[in-house]
Amino acid sequence: NAGVTQTPKFQVLKTGQSMTLQCAQDMNHEYMSWYRQDPGMGLRLIHYSVGAGITDQGEVPNGYNVSRSTTEDFPLRLLSAAPSQTSVYFCASSPGGTGEKKLFFGSGTQLSVL
Amino acid sequence: GEDVEQSLFLSVREGDSSVINCTYTDSSSTYLYWYKQEPGAGLQLLTYIFSNMDMKQDQRLTVLLNKKDKHLSLRIADTQTGDSAIYFCAERAAGANNLFFGTGTRLTVIP
Image (tube, rainbow over all chains, first blue to last red; front, side, top):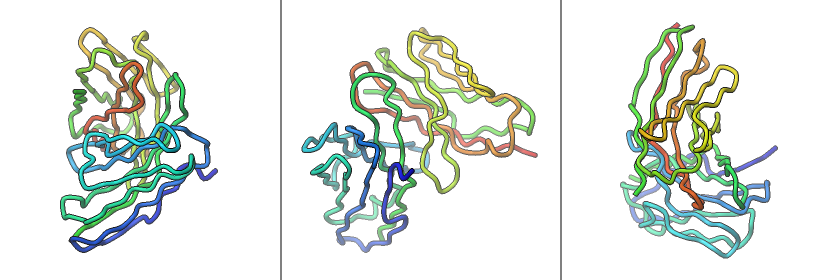
């Protein structure tokens, strides 16, 4: 079972570079989201999507873009990386509708911006 | 906005019980969750509780919810070294899609 797949696992960027973190899920989940994890701050929501073609901002969206052209994929783009974006990034998905909405997480991408 | 708080660290001896606490501010929280994160891995759902319940037990795990005080706890009985991890509390408001997470509690089990 693949579940939620994130690539790459590690990435080092220079300030000002751009890159895309990939996220794919094979569970036909409507909801997908991106979080960043920083020491002592827990997980903070960057962007989320409730279905293909629909995206919205979370708590910390500045410096990041997302798109959702298919149900399966939800890439996160950094247009001009800054040292403050050094973090561990997690993609997560869950089924739509009502109910307990269990989130399934990818294994994370560790990003360093120099 | 939502605020979910946890203490950062907890150490227990192997075989003892662990109690990890969480407080939240959103009175409309519908579901409350406990996630476990092992080193270098993503988060895995351990258990969850619906807001109309005050207790849920699942093998060695017991979740207690005090809605009046907005306090959630996770008790792990007979704690093992494999339970060493970071534990996150999370809440979701009624009708909302997003989960809000606490800072995480790093549990260290001493052999």
